Image (cartoon, rainbow, N blue to C red; front, side, top):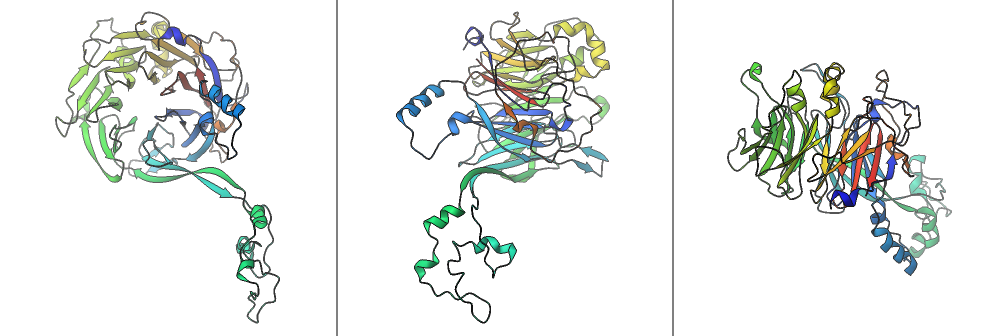
Length: 496
């Protein structure tokens, strides 16, 4: 699908939208977004250590009553529309910890979330903070609510639920000398009638999350990436210097497949910034470095894959400055679904690579070229170290990334020199910026994302110079032209 067919991008939904002037708590800021393989679920992680799951509405609405012909015709019409999502559940994935050996505080912030293949109706999801990876199982269950209670006089209050009339149909019969009721009725009277059952049980669907595995104590540095393998059995976790290979069923051990730590830290020249598995070949993976390199690794070559099978490097000469190495660091890499192309994002540009051509990228999309003269100010404010993510459409022809001013930038293959499409991910232009003095108090209530709103998109304002707001995290729907992106504590969805 070319960009010409995706020009008309429209606002779809927003979750967690704040009122103008409302303060944004640090724990509510979104830090990770990921669609599952089918696109029926969307997971969002935040700095408070929570994972919020949304489910697709039109695919999950299955009423027990049979539908009329008109309703079925309406469903056929709805299926051709863009997906809409609703809140499903949320759970506390990580808690703040303290490493007493290193005197280091470990934040609960969710760095990445990844979906895993599940053999049944339950869903599996990996989440990680700086040090610990957890595998969560989320499953639907039916809960029964009591409509009418009549406590049995011979049962204590803690067990009053068992004294419902449906379970004790002979509660008015005389009791024996030991205080127990005498069951004088027939066996038929000992079972609840349909009328009583209707008073007791009102079943409704709910979801609960349970921790299945905890993969800990394997990284000395902060984890920046996790990626599932196409074999459905293993995944990798990457920090600044090492990449480990895990089996989903074994949390007690992992295999170190890449180790870039030198014998002396003074000789350190680059660190790992992102890592991902090949979408088809389970033996291939790619990782990016702070020097702007993308290294392809074949795990069949050796047990320790420090030497990449192929190195993708932009050899185009350019003017060097004090900040050249900083802005060259790649913050995110993503494989296209065909496995032949890689999309990378550094501070200045979005680049599309062909893994068969390692000398230069196929296309370069300028994102922050207008900020080149302000690199010194960006460095002083630590903004130059912001890590922007990128994503691709399923056909690999369209790409998206974020920028300052809550801007969503969308490009198409073969149009590297053009501006592409720019969308402001905000419904209120006068929104109050995040205050750095707000305390990181934990919230006991549900996440801010449980508040969903729907409406029409408002006109864009010129926020191109607004560096206080930024769009770092986003994800492309696996089957339809739909993009989910995060701005502060709000989740926006746009469709074409």
